[in-house]
Image (cartoon, rainbow, N blue to C red; front, side, top):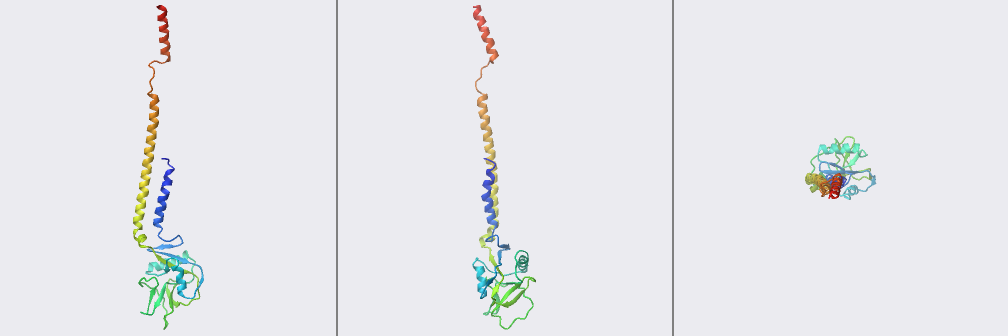
Length: 232
């Protein structure tokens, strides 16, 4: 088996392994823990927060929700270093008048908050939450915005990718290792067979019947025979 065949065999398998590792929809998304994030930098005119939310739901995601200090710090750091974001980013949060509390649009539990010190107004019906990108604190504001300078979306990694990706990586690694071993063994067997074949070809010629006498011996014997005939 030619040595050049090895990369050709491995490329599809390496691609499989890469596809297994890539849990987010595309390279424009950023992964953190069990979720993928994307910041849509396009400024859009909106009539309600639902218009902003549709920017995310159209991509299989929702407006961002934040559940711990680490996630808040990650988003803040990424907004500063990788995404050119405005001072304030809308969070995927709304005020539920039924139980007078803030809730996430993605229906996740409100387990963390980072509200800045500010007095709440009497009416919170049209109140939304904003992430201040300079301090990382959250502040309340009016949902009736006419435009937004960017939308931060978040999508959970599917169960099969989130919990089975390690197994997929292991399987891919085993497949690649097995292929390498089989390829090397195949190359060794091919080399040995070729060498034995060449050796057998040489042996055929080397074992061909040969006269026990060389040319000089044959000439001497012929002369002796002629001399014997003359004596007779």
